[in-house]
Length: 262
Image 1: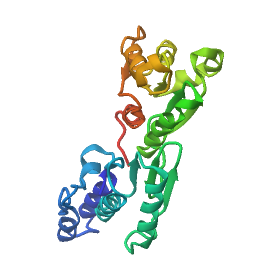
Image 2 (image 1 turned 135 degrees about the vertical axis):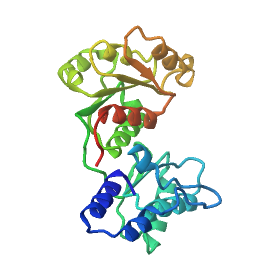
Image 3 (image 1 turned 90 degrees about the vertical axis):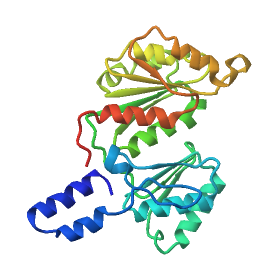
Image 4 (image 1 turned 180 degrees about the vertical axis):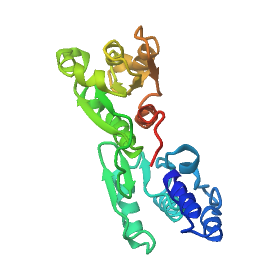
């Protein structure tokens, strides 16, 4: 159950369409389910307005299916699973298709982002839109994780890919779009300079996301991370290396500031 369903339920009680007993039964679900290997949070949507997300790395396909089933049975409308490789995604989709309770649920796998979506992507309901700006094609895996996460959290996303500082005119061609955004995610490896440039062009918050892309002295993204942390542009926050999910999630929260989620 999420906030919109809770609101509808309470309105039904107030209007006399739903009995108190029926409402108690609906909201009486435990706040989490004990699976032994996991405790799926069934009230995440009520508390925060955003659904529980599964981090797929390190979990077996069977565990992901079990957690997904528990969330869907707990009335979560869709489930986002991050860091899922192709083979694991295939196994999860096969198992869900054979599960009577989940067989009719749509599943989509986004190979670039290693993201599996169980259920339908929600309609955008934020204040405006989020821009995900990506320095190079090699950073797409992280940029797409950010973009899809923001979309799953209810934000409209505009993608600007291959707009790194090596050809800054490619970025400057989209200044108007950047200036209208609710938030911008700047994804870059190498020296990570994209975030500083974007920060100097926008009035909105910028979330800098360093990637592990680069040659030896990039140190697996540490060079980009330190450059972003030391940016001279104001209004920049920085997430961990390759943490597209965290960047997209934060951008969606900014896009939904003061919005009543439906």
